[in-house]
Length: 160
Ligand code: GUN
Image 1 (cartoon, protein in one colour):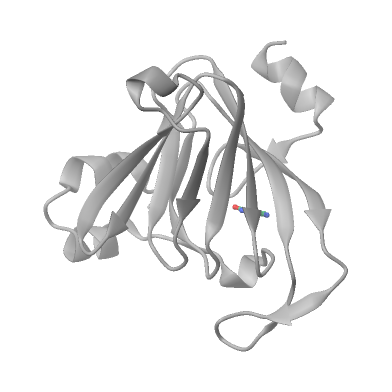
Image 2 (cartoon, helix red, strand yellow; image 1 turned 120 degrees about the vertical axis):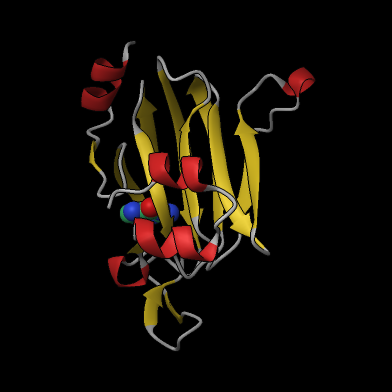
């Protein structure tokens, strides 16, 4: 299947951070997030990036687990202790790709296709569950001030 057929088949819609997604699971049980707000215990999504799509730098309040399904490898970028880290999510283990990754809560992270063409399909789960109130898209100017050593990547991977 090509990306357009997959997006239709899986009923994905555009995500505000970039790419396409659909929530596939939301626990009926509740818990409190790190700020003491009531949240579902856990949620899962399909997430797809195609071609030059970017998931722009954003942060959430839960650790996020990523699982690679099919297509082209995805590069996840995140800042930890003011250093930019990258993970290659894919199934070519011999070149260092991993099929699972954990992005810690509260860090700024972004993703894109490693090759910039084709598509990559993954799942992402969070616990406590996702809520757009816990979701913050980065402002370019703020990230440039916080991480002055990475102007090119911040320029490319932020929305405004
Ligand atoms: N639900 C809606 N958006 C997201 C997201 O970016 N991550 C996760 N895990 N769930 C979501």
